[in-house]
Length: 277
Image (tube, rainbow, N blue to C red; front, side, top):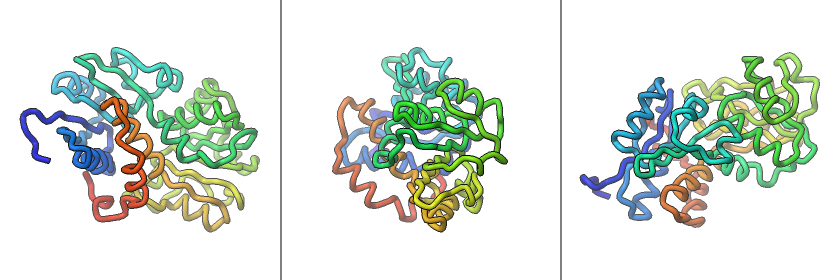
């Protein structure tokens, strides 16, 4: 689709953001749906500057990634009730100059864990940032027993205070038989794909291991899960589901389950997924 003076700008913002597949996915949606818009990636550590750009340019739809999901909240004009309860925003709509924040991460998390039994199960969240808060929100709604481990103990305790559960230190991870482990940190993300956020010894056979990282598609944590007889769940499912929800919010319509299924089958496993965007 040709870009013109009428083409609407959407964006993904974060620091870093070069790994993001959001421009590839959203631009493919625009092309298939014949929407006159383009998504670009902007990397900036200063969230106040980014919010100023969203207002001024304007950027109509903004996907927000780490480390800005929490720090952006006080800079917005309005925050959706679910996003406010989570305490994290990953989507901003610019509605006639007013910025409203949403959280579609929780939609993606629900999709990824849709067939995992969570009620009364021990679930470990690795990390305590914005993505981890969305995970904890879903786990609380699902009546799971929440355990949180973060390298900053105060952040882990804060998340537990908000959603319930237990804060664990790294040397305490072996004390709980986890039915599900969720990585909500960037550990294992390209280019540092040889790392894992957890020792493989805590992964039990038959458990489920969900890694929010989707670049690479098969992380070290996922490989460890398979080697231990556990089920590995890719962050790609979450990424796709939350992105389609972002477009639904902006466009006011569903862009189609068929298109979502096509992307999921593709697994974005081509040269596009290896590019720095």
